[in-house]
Image (cartoon, rainbow, N blue to C red; front, side):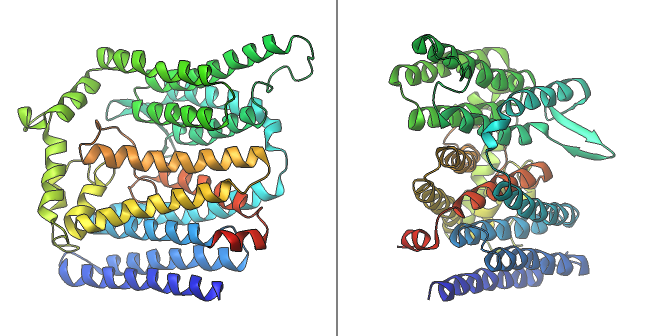
Length: 421
């Protein structure tokens, strides 16, 4: 009976895909034969992810369907915006699908991931240094490395390593370093806390140097949430939480683009042709879509700056409507709720922390970017998971999701059925 429900949900996802692409092809006269092939490829990717995962029992099926729906919306909108970008995104989606299954397989086969804690500490340092030496600046942030004509963001991979490090630490709070020393436990606990802060703020510091402040905020929030949930001392949590105040002041004083974004957030209408141009165009697009949107292929998303990455949510709201935007937010909320519910059932503490941190990372990333484009919070430079254009972001999102699915698979079948209620 449960399997039948899953199939019905898959059919619904496929029906929405077919209906959306059919509408796009009939309304957008610029669509070529390449667009039809890309549409078929996008639907095929969703089917392959679902069918292969279900037949091999690769994790929670509801989470899988939610991600398939988000991916479908992303591929559809990017095709709507640019055939050239859509071709690249489909290639990245295929690569991401392969990486997803490899991640799932590797995580289920390799045991004791906490043994590699020093890899999670020093590999990011090497990647940060490589970015500073060999990287190039894009939109003001030094966060890209190009090899053989293909660019990628090492900071995206560092998000995964950061979560693994926190999971290793919170597996036994204040007992990660100097495990073999059995004297003066209080002193060792203090040293562990200091080393934890050193590693965390070292990651954030490198991102600040690279001017990639959106990812720095994301890592800080993930750390604070995991510290609150899995930490032992309220005082230590409050100390780290309070550090956000000097951090905000430092960023505002030190970086011109931060001041611009804050000013645009406070009053974008004061300088609508310059500082407030991005956010006002985003708000205009959302407002012009109304409740039900102008229709796919019938809006003017080209008026929105960097619409395929940072502002793709605005384009979705314009053409699918505010109700479509709310539906996307609900998809993320259900994903977060379902994921946290699963992680609370995991007995292994490392898996529980890692899974919880992975869910929180994707959820916060979605909240930060959506909050920015609707003027709830100042704009940042991160992408909307599984929807925005971007190879590095999409592949890393698939890696994180592969980890989540591998962890969810550790629950017994009977326990998994209980989660369906």
